[in-house]
Image (cartoon, rainbow, N blue to C red; front, side, top):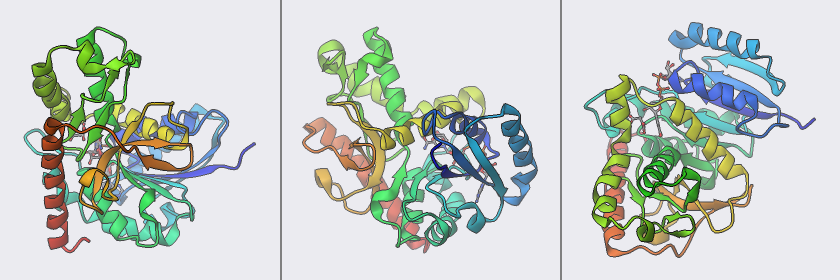
Length: 328
Ligand SMILES: NC(=O)C1=CN([C@@H]2O[C@H](COP(=O)(O)OP(=O)(O)OC[C@H]3O[C@@H](n4cnc5c(N)ncnc54)[C@H](O)[C@@H]3O)[C@@H](O)[C@H]2O)C=CC1
Ligand SMILES: O=C([O-])CC(=O)C(=O)O
């Protein structure tokens, strides 16, 4: 039996938590022979509901669950964690942009960054889901200077999965035929889902879908606005698909990327592709199972460059706003 991986999930009693915990516990995230120690973090008002979720995890009798620690104390919650999944925060409502949440959610991530630096395992990796996730990740990272920059991630995998699904539907093929979909920039309405480098059945997506006006227009806006469309339809923001994307993100970072493909996650920019350094922005990345790298040499044409510039500009503005708030 392997020794357990310790995973912290904040907002564990929330919508995403309710889908995510059972996927982690069943082995979907770390594999079918990897035990997990769950550290479930909630604010005090969420603790009663979290107690119910813990009862349900118990009632699944998962063979891989080594232990469950529900807590509202972040120092206890992040103790010894190898992975910290920062979900807990307020979701937006209809009519809001994700960055409207910065004032509400931003300050959560200063304390959590500090508590991670103080308590987590030396190999900790952190994935921020709570919105606006790129800039919340920037806040946490800047409040945890001892944790190297390559351990911080913010989630754009849901956007990648959405983009793949839209391309597959338009091309009339199964989604598994779609590869090399890069999301650039912010998890927001300015993100750029890059169809120029995407492949369908191994061919350039633009050779399979000949409708470039659709690709440049409706495709991009559908992906950018998908979160809002779900809020409108469901009355609350996407949860099961978000939890699924968390599982996909961690799996993609901890298992080798298939040859020739890449995946999307927001990481601390090292200046690749001329992007401002030290902001958290989505790139195409590859992993060998333990180390990841930004894929270099992906062609960026003039159209793509314009879209990337716009989303990076928004991230710089968000960074400046949180600097002004004293959060970084
Ligand atoms: N990056 C992405 O692709 C996506 C991000 N999200 C974001 O994820 C976040 C969570 O969404 P839901 O689970 O639907 O919200 P929710 O409101 O159902 O659950 C959030 C939970 O977090 C808890 N919480 C609040 N502050 C906390 C803190 N300081 N520490 C620990 N727990 C805290 C709340 O008590 C609540 O139980 C939202 O910010 C949402 O916008 C949602 C979908 C996709
Ligand atoms: O749109 C929202 O507020 C929730 C979210 O991040 C998404 O569904 O992509």
